[in-house]
Length: 429
Image (cartoon, rainbow, N blue to C red):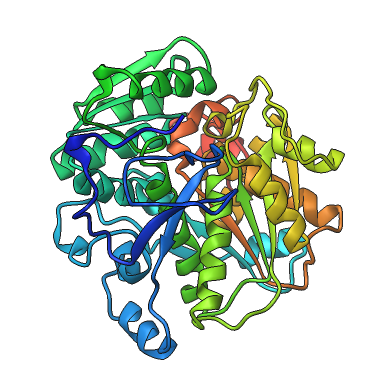
């Protein structure tokens, strides 16, 4: 359902940098900038259309490189005001691109393997990027409350960003999330509401709330602010290419929850090509899902264009969206680029978390385990070329999903405080 802008959220004077309009992904109909997310002609999803700078790629490159070490260095390419860096926000982004040589050796990759480690963001997940953009839209449209439906990471990101920016927050989560994510979402002092059901139940409730007078003045970052929110994921594409010396990677492996992150990374790569900031060349995008919630992977393998919903049953709860909104667009991108969508089971997820930790010192949450596990599987299946450059995304911190690895991870030994006991335990090797 499309949501009309109220009198308190009129858009006539809205200025969001290069953002020019909202455009329907399906029929191309354009709408003024506002808090709407569905086309009023065909009900297709809306996304931001731009008047981007052109004609001087080297000048734009220098402008970006001289900017702050966060996502606001890319403000000329984002739906944010020019003075965004001067406003109170969490300043996420410009996280490490780790050259993962030990993991590469383990997996047999010779063309260069990199981990884009977004656990370094303020609330330790990539969600800080998307929320930061949504906050600027919320300010522009006069909202007073920030909200979301969340599988965990987004709830924490909204809670933190709302407090920093001076908004009230009220976020909604499934009732059975990991304890670490619940605590992190609650600690900022906003309202945190558990909903009996899975993420799709939470999302349906939020859609009802938006259409009710109770939701007046509320900006739901991943619903009525979704077109702006999604643009935050483009900054991953921008950073990866800049950190590679303004080059496109040959291959990327990206986790799939709603699918928005993958589609926006592809959008960001295409924008960099169009602006002349990177040399145009083929690249492949691979999507990663958990076997217990793999509607997009299932559709891809079956050759279907329709993604059939599934009931989630996986330890990778941050990816447990059984009816992903961007699923069909993920299929299009994987097929267009020559990539694929694959899945791994929970045991493989845990093994992959440990593999990344022991080779590169990066403790990933379960979503990162899914991505690394799928990478390993795609290499073994011959779908990823080990002789070409490869970027793998880790989108969150393993401290948020300790339950996944705790049963099989602990002290090597427990001994008496003596050298003899140390030797007896076989630790003197």
